[in-house]
Image (cartoon, rainbow, N blue to C red; front, top):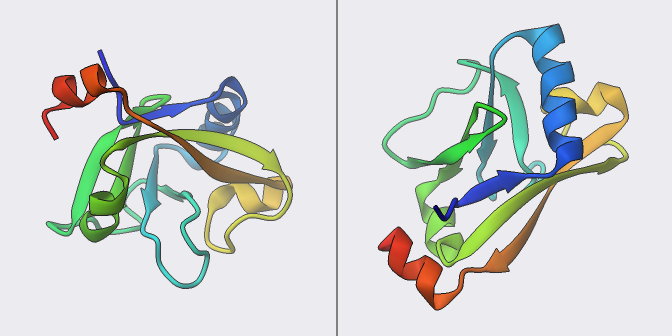
Length: 118
């Protein structure tokens, strides 16, 4: 089955570490101003999602949302959430760990697009 969002092993390990510290988590990628289009990790419920947000899927059991207008640009790509050394978004939980989440992407194949029914 084709997934809209997936995570690297390093990301899954960091998610587990953050869950141990903060409890249930959520991700949101808005394409907004402060931290660009970085995936932001929050304690679940700290960011209120609404009808302008799209649930792309789960990574490590954690919901991953994107602003609907941003989704229109990304809907033909699979998002691959990775983690690298460095300071991340100032509101995202991984920043104090000396890590930051990073979105990589690849275009879906024709077969995958048909599966997704974009």
